[in-house]
Length: 193
Image 1 (tube, one colour):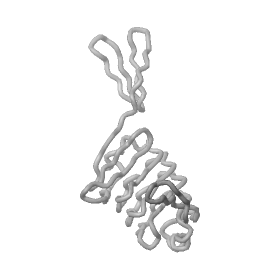
Image 2 (cartoon, helix red, strand yellow):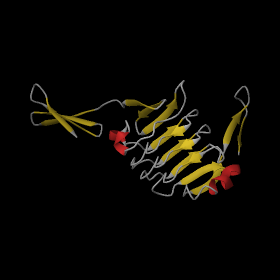
Image 3 (tube, one colour):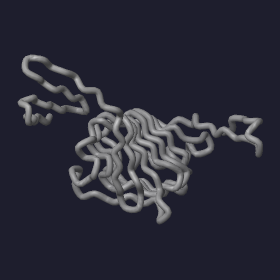
Image 4 (cartoon, helix red, strand yellow):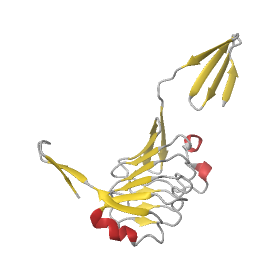
């Protein structure tokens, strides 16, 4: 929460993206367009829009930094606003402790390009669903990723491979992911496993 007395004696208060201005005895609410926050982590761009944080690869690659402490992450002050995490195709590494203590994350999407998820990456985040498009054989997972047991949605042909990682990755694995394929014109589509 932040308060500032303005030059005319008005008091501006900001808390969790909500603003109010007290003019005399009147409380005036101020609306703000949804802001976009951007940070870098390693050679990725991290963009927060609303409650969604998207990690985007750059021309240099897709590896995020490792973090020694939770409060070292650039998005630390926004950690309780993050509800959805999307790692775009081309991101290859989620850094250690990158999203630890982001208590309100519900959904995480991991692309096929992902090869490493660092230790404690989502610890104490309470994520419910992880949609993982990466193959079990190409994804290295470190220990203590989560503090809870999320549902991992994977391709049915990857289900056994992910279950074999259950000593490092306690989760409920579901082989329910499908891919939408389109022909060259984008006309005919079909869901495939």
